[in-house]
Length: 284
Image (cartoon, rainbow, N blue to C red; front, side, top):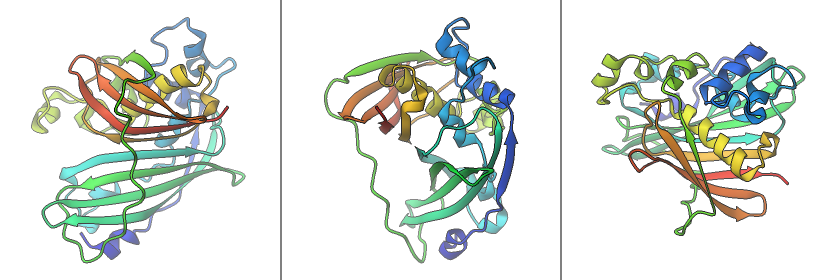
C-alpha cells in the first residue's frame, strides 16, 4: 500500500435520493418494529408522523468498497472495521436527496508486521448545501503495514469508566436482522451465506458492525434521551467483536457530563464486549 496514493485517493461525489421506504427499511434492519404497537417503534417504521433514525446517515452517500480496487494495493481480505464516529449537525429528513463527499483524512502506519489504519471522512449535505452529518470510519488494514510515511493519530476514544454503569439497556437483535440490513447498503455475503461465513472462520453469518452500532444507538436514545432521537448529537465507538443475528445486545451506559454519556455493549449470551470506548453527545 502506497501512502501518497491512499492519502490522495479521489472519490466521486455520490448524489443519492432516498425514500420514506428506505428510511423504514433501515429502521426495520436495526430492530424497530419488534414491538409493533409501541409508538416509540412506529414513529420510525410507519409513515404517519414519521421520523428518520439518525444513524441511518451511515448508509447514505457511501462511495462503495473502494479498498477492493486493485489500484489501491490493499490486502482487502484482511480488513477490519475499527471505529465509527458520527457527528450530527441537522436532523436527517425521512426522504430526500443527499450529496456525499468522501476524503482520506489519515493514513497511520503501525509497522511492517502490525498493519496500518486508514481513516475516511464523509460529509452529507442536502440539496440546498446544508451540512447534515460528518462521518468518520477507521479501517484497520492488517496486511498493509510498513509505509513510507505516516500521519499522527487523531485523539483516541476513551475507555469506559472502571465502575458499575449508571444505566443498562438490553435489546434483542432479530434472527433475520442481517438479511434485512444488507438491503440498506452492505450486501457482503459474509452476512447471509453460511458457506462464506465458514470460510471466514465463523459458525454462521455475522451481523454487520454498523447494524450493531444502530442497535446501540437505539439503546442510548431509549435510556439516555427519553426516546427522543433528535437529542443525539454524536455517536463514536470502537468495534471489538462480531455479533450473531438473534443475540441480545446489552448496552452499559455511564453519565459522563451534562450533555454526554460513555457506553459499551456486550452480547448477553456470550458475555463478550462487542462495542467499546463508546461516546454519545446528547443535547438538553
